[in-house]
Image (cartoon, helix red, strand yellow):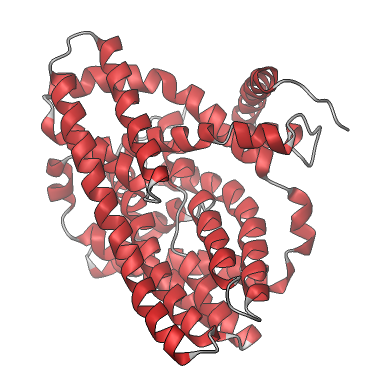
Length: 405
């Protein structure tokens, strides 16, 4: 079925369906974002096909800006006082869950395929966590507590660590797949530097934007004006980051981090109150747009590699988070449920998978590896976007961070 509407009319319909399906999801005791995703799937290419490819390209800035706002919100929760209270243990958990996911996925895929480059690349994508899904659940249910604070910190740094792991894995994989040793040596040195450069420049850009706009926002008294300045900071960060191939998530997270640690408490409270009023709207748009791009018809073609990836990544996140929390002597409750808040995966992993296809397309005979990785990550992201938020809600309920009626 093909009902072509204008882009604006289509967005209006997406918001309406997102709201209605979000309410239905709440009735079913599911996170509202599951309803938003389903609305997008219904109106997308696998459903009513309201939007054509050209319209989706025109509207591609909406998910980027929404994710920038979500990253800012995450950064604004990272107060230095809270980080000191949680201690270094949370970073041990971050390292443990990321590297355990990398190791288990790489090992499991290699045992099945005997293809080391494919195994390393899929393993390197496993640590990436979609922050939007976890944050949406936290915001929707107004979760508060130790686990909530821990999740904010881990999802904030997870993607940065994932980019580093991916950069090194890509360099090694290209070295193994390259037919020319000299070219591979040059390539591996270049590729090893890329992720570190991207993160460093993203942090510098975020610090510059965050420092400048935090200074402006302190001179402003009206709450609505503060919101305008905040969006100006986020939009500038996303735009510049995309223009120079940096990480919009890291840039906007850094902006939020500086804002919450530079500005006075009264300004932070006032700005957060106004920001949270528009976050619901942004979540409907972000997950609705994500649903437009999802194609559930890919699930039957997931294959054994996809199933292995889902099981191994889930096990890596759960075991890694538990072992890290156990090592740092966190509470039994935190050990048991921390990993369940880290299962979501979508945008960053898909973006890195697309980068793999581009990079391997230049190496004769390696194109098939890139296409295989893209198909696996695209299909498994559908699964993780559904089970991730549900698992996060369950974990937050079990730890008492979400108060049940």
